[in-house]
Amino acid sequence: MVRYLSISLLPCLLGVQLAAAAESGGRATNDDWRWTLQAGGVYQAESSLDSGGDMSATRFFVSGGGAKVLAGRWRLGASVGYGEDNYDFSVSSGFGGLDPWDRVREFRAGVSMQYFANEQWTLYAIPSLRFNAESGASMDDGSNGGLLAGASYRFSDTLTIGPGLGVFTEIEDSTSFFPILLIDWKITDTLSLETGRGFAASRGPGLQLRWRYSPTWQFAFGGRYEKTRFRLDDKGVAPGGVGQDKAIPLFALAEYAVGQDLKLGLIGGVEVGGEMRLEDDSGKLVSRSDLSEAGFLGATFEAKF
Image (tube, rainbow, N blue to C red; front, side, top):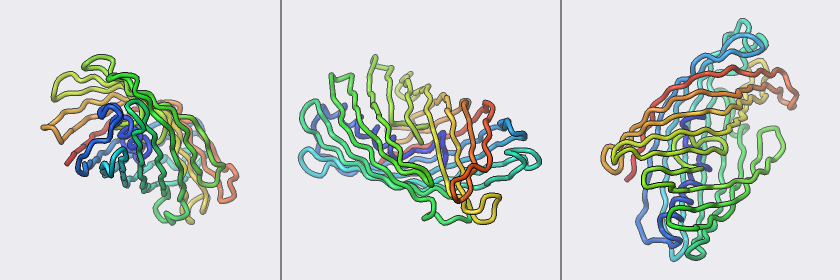
């Protein structure tokens, strides 16, 4: 899916959990369903592959979700999203002379459960399902899932920290376990340090510094580690195999608020540490290539109602 801009359900829902814990002072509040719709697109400029040739991509996403207090100290959230990555390889020499894949689709669905234990502690659990597959391949063959669980502690009105653990399955790969640490630190009235929410929260852990310049303008600077594996179709160079795209995008975001419930944004930056892998249907490596740094530029949209 759209790695730089997509609202990866897990980081997004985690951010919602942490923000809710910080803003509510550790208490569930009786509110109605609050819905969010997000969308965006990005163009990634050409990047050189060390195996020869170049690769560029265009990406888009759309996602939506909501959250509501059920009763007492419980809060429930849910989100779904769909996106596509359209890759363009220089076939003559790129990726070992291969044209490994073109259009990769992703569908995600997740729920979040949050329990306000007391004024400081909040517990959360976030199960999710993901389907990543090239056009022409069955989405079911690209299914994987996972769970994030942990707790956040509200030290003060300006600082909430949450440790946790993630467990995720991978397509034709071993289950991964990794620790997570959520931070919502309001350094000043206009400056904050955040993990787990906002645009560019997509497929891995990250950190961003956000500056509220005015009531209408906000700016963010950050980066994150991302890795995506997806099922390939039966007609390519590795029929029924697996593709992998891994990178570290560093980004800057400018957001303009149109009223209280609508935001428009521009995002740009550079991707570093890029790597692509192509595996056959038995998991054997067919080809691997490192990518040079590449710039990207896109636009975002967010509406709440």
